[in-house]
Image (cartoon, rainbow, N blue to C red; front, side, top):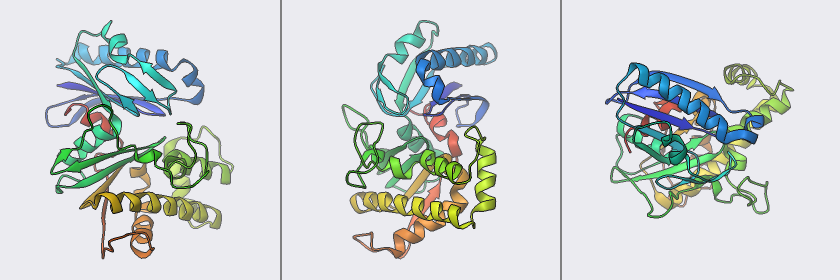
Length: 297
């Protein structure tokens, strides 16, 4: 049995995972904006507490951590949505945990899990996107993850889709994730409906499901899916995948958003090589794909 950890831009999930990718136990915590002032302490305290709890009841072989951003074997080189840079997370955790610890970009972990167990396992060549606080990406070619030598790469979220557009946490303007992340979508809904900033994810989803025909919410959905269709079509034009998987918190909204994205890609003048259909699947492992994938790297 292994421990998988998903360190997201707005949450941390820790799970005990068996050899078949099944989650035996899981705990989650939300990362609030105010937490990011002491983000390293928040991360380390929660991970250490959760891991020690699991070790009490399970024999654990190793630990894997999925991280949003650029990593090497030990360090988070850059995770802009967490405000982390050159953070030796493996070294810090290893002081109190005597187990092998591996880290990898979260979108790559999710892609490995979904190509092994989930939404893109039937396809040799595919793309995977994680939509959450930001947008992560991965490319699967001949059933294998394309993996650059020095850095994780495939930062789909930081391709520019709008010249001189919104300022991104990475310092550039007009990045895809500033228009197509779930954080952006949720915040626009919250602002438009004057909702409490601390509304739970479940309550917000119910609100969107109920109000999706409201003209203001419908307009947000239309613009958001338009931006997503532009970014995704750019990736299709480059990689020509058999299928695309989308994970992160997008999976909870897939019934609302996915048909509109497919329609805009197929019906709009966006694809160089026109298609009659396109396969875009929501991650079948849901928001846990990254955590499960850490046990496969």
